[in-house]
Structures are given as structure tokens and as C-alpha cells.
Length: 469
Ligand SMILES: *Cc1c(COP(=O)(O)O)cnc(C)c1O
Image 1 (cartoon, rainbow, N blue to C red):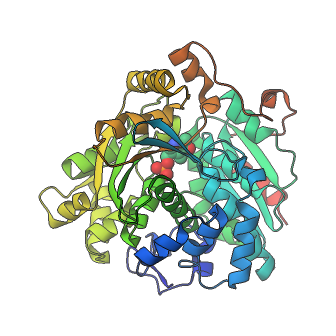
Image 2: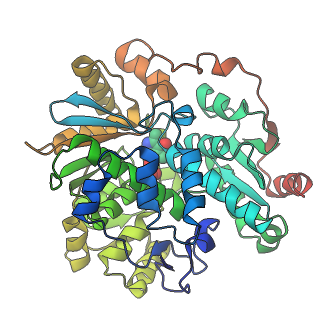
Image 3: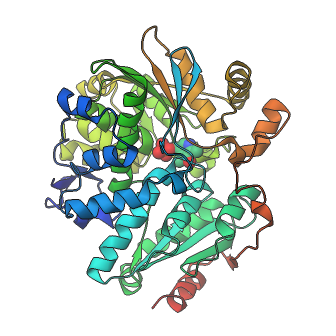
């Protein structure tokens, strides 16, 4: 499976070539040259497969330059009941008649990012052992991504993680998830500043090609193709779990920020999975909802991003969106370059009335957004009707999903985090905190390991230089 760039400036590369990279060399995103197709006969055979078996059947279509046995071992090592606390890995539970919750948040950090990140950790380690290389991952986090990356990379040979987070600005639970890790290859740098300061430092280091090369600096951000690929699997798993006939279509409701999760659903649909609607839900930061309603994609400035009660969706732009737009403009890299030039120069592009927008809509997307009050009401409603507590992000998706519910079409709502991660909002909605999963009861009392640093690029570079070999 050759991979190309959405901006047309990269010679076709193999999966292993693009695995460790971020952006393509031309500034675009990597994407398979063609989407592999899944036949009805295959779908039929996949009924009854375990999660790792299904993951192997799907991912081998995208990862064809590793020996099959190696790929199988890496997948088997990743998707275990011990790591995901459930033999189904992504169990479904009924919320209402024809409405289901796909549980994606049973991994170590209790959010859906673990599903892709845990595999990434094993793929990275394998690649680095094979090449004898060393990778120093530098990242910035406001919570979920950093902790998911650290839990996936802890103890991995050939990998070190330097994670910048805003000092004393994450929730106690999120802080404890990261800072309680005692692994020598995980370095938490608490930066005196806000998340944007952390991100600016990562950007500054990324622009210093010499430093990057000298210290083998890499990233694990949401544009990484392997993360999108790993997420495709659970759309198939969800469909298999709630249907019994091979042509039964379902709809998915997906709380969205960087368009990574729902991009995987879109690709599953292109591969032939019977998906009727991809229901995209945003919070008050509605960049993507605005696009699907109007055809205008307008990125926000940092100052325009609202801090909400679903913070992992508080984004100024949707970093994976270019993969989808590339298809909408019929894979014309010149048009992609032109559209992103417009974003750079005037902050938006407008596809209103174009064939591209028509195609974007016809690909099954509908959208909506929620407010803080909507999320609290949805949490209360679902608790009342099903006895389950959902988190604020999941509530975004459920709220918008129910608005598009159709008679006779199963609706699968993706659970992107467990409520315990956002306890304060649950207390606000229900008057009491959610139950903690076993093993997380005393997380905040564990000893913590972190360095406090000034938001100073040179000091942080210096620190990295002294802690890499
Ligand atoms: C990252 C995240 C999202 C948004 O996912 P995208 O892939 O960025 O669209 C939603 N909910 C939670 C809990 C997250 O951590």
C-alpha cells in the first residue's frame, strides 16, 4: 500500500517510511494511494472475530511492509483484556431502543486515544529496534493526548518522551495520570504558562532542523497516519456488534475536535462498511459544524477558542481535516495547496456552492454542536433512562446523535472518555461523582515525578540536550 501526500509533493512511500513521521515533507498529510475495499463476503467472515483478529484483518490492508506474523504479534500484544480491562476491547452497551454506546475508553488513561496510541507504542518500538535508532518524542498537552502517549510509550526501548504541560492547569486526575509514572523514559516538564506556551515551544523546536536531527526529535500528534488507521477497526467492530445482516446500515455519532476519530469512520465507510450517517458533534468550538452547515472552513485564533467542559475538543483548527478535503476536491493536490494557502493568508476557505462541498455532504456527514447546558442535560437524561454515566465529550456526541436518530437505523454513539476524568462536570450534572474504576481510586495520592520549567525555548532545549544520548 503506497502512501502519498495530500499536497502532491512526496514520492510514494511505504507504511514503515511514514510511521515515525509527522507532516509529509511537503507540509501535507499522508494518505493511502487508494482505500482498500472490503467485500460483503469478508464482512460476513469477520462476524465472530475477536478484536485483535479483526484488527489484524483490517490493518494488514494498510500495513503491508511488516512480516504478517510480526504484525499479528504486535496487535496481539496491544489489544489484551489486561490493558483494556474488557475482553471485547470496545464493548457496546444499549442506551435506548436502537441506540448504543461503543465503549472506547477502557484503556489505561480512560479515553479513546489509548486504542490507537497503545498500538503506536508497539509499532514504534518495533521499528526502532529494527533500525537501532532512538526517538525522543517531544509533545505539548492540555491533558488527554499527553497522558495517552506517556502510557503507550512507558518502558519502550529506544523511546523517550518529553511532555510539556501547563504547570498547575490540568485537572488533578489528568495531572496524576501523567506525573505518577515512574518510568525512566518518561519526562514530565511542567511549564510555567498556558497550553499555548507549551505548544509554541514544541513548534519552535520543530522549526530548528539541526536540533531536531541532532537529538532525534519526533512527535505523536493526531495527524499520525497509524493512529487514524488503528481507529478504523472499532467502526467495523461496532457495526458487527449491533447488526445481524450484512447490508444493515448504522449511523455513528462522534464527538470531534481534530477530526481524527471521525476521519477513521469516514475511511471505514469508503472501504465499504455500511454506514448511513457520520454524525459529527462539536462543542462551542464549532469550526467543523460550521463547515458542514455552510461550506466555510474558518480556523480560529487562540484567543477565539473557548474553554469548555469538553476540553479535549477545544480546538482552533481540525488538523486531520485536510485528509477529508483532499477527497472532496477529487484528490487534486493543487486545489488542496490553494485552499490551505487561503487559510494561511485570510484564515478561511469557502466551498459554498461547489461540487467539492456537494461531495463532502454526500459522503454521509451531518453535524451539530452542544453547549455546556446541553451536555449537563444529556448526562442527566442518559443517567435517568439507562443508569449509565457518560462524560461531557460523549454527551456532546449523544446530544447531536439523538437529533439525527432515524427509525430503523441503529445509532452507535462513541464513548470517548470515562466520566471519572471529568468528575467536576458530573457532580454539577448529577450531584454526585461517578464511580471510579478499580485501580484508580487513589491515583491522586501516588508520588509524582515532574520538573517545573520556565516557558523558555532555550532552557528547554538545553534540558533535552542534557537528557538524551
Ligand atoms: C481527543 C478527544 C476527542 C476529539 O477527538 P478528535 O480525534 O480530535 O476529533 C474527543 N473526546 C475526547 C475525550 C478526546 O480525548
